[in-house]
Every structure is written in C-alpha cells, then in structure tokens.
Image (cartoon, rainbow, N blue to C red; front, side, top):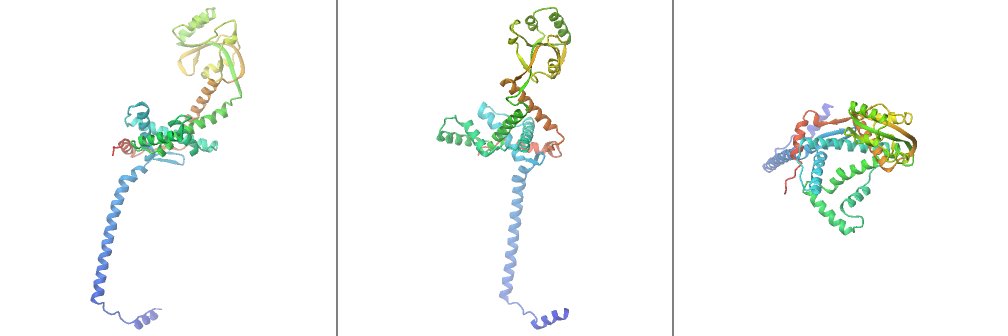
Length: 355
C-alpha cells in the first residue's frame, strides 16, 4: 500500500513554486477569512449578551405543577394583568411587592391544577371560541354591534399595551383560567350535588352561643319554658334558626345537610326529634356552642342558594386537597436556591417604562 502511494507521488512529481500573483491571492484570502471569523465572534458575543440579558431571564423557572413548568414571562405578566385590571376598574394602582408575587404564584399554581383536573378527569378543554365570547361579554353589552365591539377592543388593546400586555396575554392569563375554574366548579357540582337529587334536610330551632357557660345558662332557661325568640335576642347568641309561628312548623327553615358545621350535622341528623341538646362545641368555631332542637327531618330537593353554597364548598375542598396531595408534584422555585434573585428581577420588571 505504501509503495503504491509513493508511486503515485513519483508520477505526479514535485509541486511547482507559486507565482507572486498566487501568493498575493492566498494572502488576501487568509486576511478575509480572519476578518470574517472576527466579525462572527463579535456578533456571537453581542448575541449572547442580548440573550443573556433580554431572553434568558424571561425563561427562568418559577413554578412546576406536575409536568407543566411555568416561566418568568407568565409570572411577570400575571402581575401586570392584576395591576392593569386594578387600575382600569378601580382607578388606583397596586405596588409590585413580594406579597403580590406570592399571590400570583399561588394563583398560577391553582389555575394549573384546575386545568389539569378539568382536562384529565372530565375531558373538557376551554376553546378559543368560548374565550372570545367571554371577552366580548366583558367589553360590550349583549346587543352591541360588531363596530361597537371593535371600538372597545381597540381601546382595551391600547390600555393593555401600556402595561406591557397583549390581548392574547389577557385571554390566556385571565379569561381562560376564569372559565376553567367556572367549568370545573360546575362539573364538581353536577357530580356531588345533581340538581334533581334529594338531600337530607332538617327543621330545627337552634342557637349558636359564644362561651360554654352562656350556652349552659341559655339551655336551662330554654328547658324551663322561656320563649325561644327571647333567648335568640341575648347578646351571647351569634346565630339562631327559628320558627316565626310556633303553631305552624312549616315556617321553620329547612336546613340542608352540609350547610352548617360538622358538629351541627352530627347531632341534627341523628338525634331524636324534640330533644333539646346539651351545648355542642361548634367544629368551625371552638369558642361557640350549639343548642339544637330538631323538629323534623326529610329528604328534599336542594334550594338554588343551598346548592350554590354546597357546590362552592366542595370546589374549595377539592382545591385544598389538590394543593396538598402527594400525587401532585408542585415546586415553587422562588423558595429554592436563587429564588430571591428571581423574585427581585420579577418585581423590577412588572412596571413598564412608557416609551
């Protein structure tokens, strides 16, 4: 193999010397290449500096909710959105602060949990049509013309721009999370409290009394025959459920199970009718005690207001459990190493300098 290579070299012969013109061309080519390399290096340094200053900080991680990572851009723009809405609706400003930032992180965390639950558990996605419809409803009345809407749209767009926001930002960071929350609450309500289903109700006379001694004294007076309405007017009574006409029990309010506290329900939906309870410490207020006399119980359709209250409570309970569930991986990078620097950077960029 080596011999063949030597033979090819011998056949080719030695290279001839370069002419002066060829040497000059080669020199100029080397100079041009060096200049190109220098320019590219300079551009790269400028580009990296721009990226490091104007791009990379916006991509810093702020929050992780399971597989979703929320970056600095969404964090800052969420605070800008709140600032803009406060100014537009209330005519005053709110200061970018660590409290505002933590509220924004909590809100983004909750919104992402809601989105994942709605899409994962119920298979429901909030589409652009629903978001656009909501935006229109926010800007103009139901009977407004397209021309009126477009005028308000342009005004809104200009207002948002002064806060470093776009209509797209507003829809993504405000309208969509709002619609997701409303739809998820509706789904939880339909699951736990179907509008046509019956639920246990009770008619009661009841007093919520501050302090165990006051409760014991009122119980003794009630048991001795003193009028319930008189007892309900005592200073220590913070709440009362009563009948307005003792001869007609239909005037006594029906209380749905779950509307009051757990302690209230435990007695009301198990005790024998017409038996006056001993003071029962309220599970929602340790310094207060219930005195309860059950009049009647039956299964009834929920009133609209009671259903709204129960659905809202079920929704809040789901959200609290989701935030504390071991099944959800939630990381707040503001609490990690370098988090303080991220927070300072975010707060410095909430306000937009007028151009």
